[in-house]
Image (cartoon, rainbow, N blue to C red):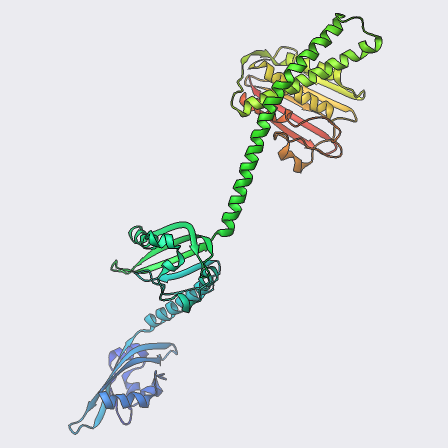
Length: 472
């Protein structure tokens, strides 16, 4: 309690002592504004004038605790008059709201920061709708994406963003109903800008409910995905085109290999007849050329068989004919073939094979294909000679064939393409070496069909090592 005219404290209760840290004996007779360093929301004279006019006043006042910290109070003042109606005393009742005030200020700052964040987002249109779908807020992203200034769209129904057909079909209202029922609704489709142009939008509508569960409105987030959709369509068309090209390659392999088989059979037959003398005696030059022609025909035959196997594999028609096979015998045969056909006199082929047969259940013809491809590559890609090493080892579970050369090697960035179809790696060092890029692709797929694997390691300029591992 304070006097009206002198503003001197006449009563100070226990609650005031605890709130401000000032004992009643120190407070009585003091001016409260000076004692508590009070900060009023309006001048004190205006507060007292309101008291004279109405008899009461309410507001927030900032006081200082004896320790120096700030105390915010919700204050209620009541004026007491004497029997003559003269103002005598003011009863002041203060409730500490410091914590609430700090929390509210922080909430206000947080909301302000959030509004700034939302208002400045440019990639997303973020705005609010009331329960009827009327736009009630508008951010910078919405202006940029949809073309409307805030004063042009706030207060209007959000169906302005939909085509006439969608509006007539009731799509905007249906989306709000779905958001209300499910909590949120997401959709992608065409939307309209202010100028009438279309854009492909991702839209999320979230229903907003108060603590009692009543619907208060909707939050709507729209993202312009036009560029992404165009890129996806371009990539899809490219993928379809690539698929068509891959299908064309497979058809070509199938058709070409079948068409080449017939002429090759005729050539083989005539070469055999020439060798047997059925077509007359050969000259010395003819007898010298005949083995070379035979070798080239066999190379063609192997290539055609690989083309057929690749076509069968990609059509799912390639089947393995598993029989007990001496792997050592197959490897020896291909080593002999490589030694006979190598045109590089400085190339040496060394082998380390088991003395005993290595029996495994494999497809003999396909094993032959794998080994001849690996041996052929080792010889072809050693144009300056060197040594090709072949080793075969076996245990109870697996057979392992390792073929290494000292040839041109493979650059690290080219390794991922090594086993791809038509993935022949052409460099200045390999451009003159013949090949179509099917051998390693087919060899690895055949190894995997057996439950095995084909691996490669290489150092440019020093050579390559291929390791074939097959289950027994």
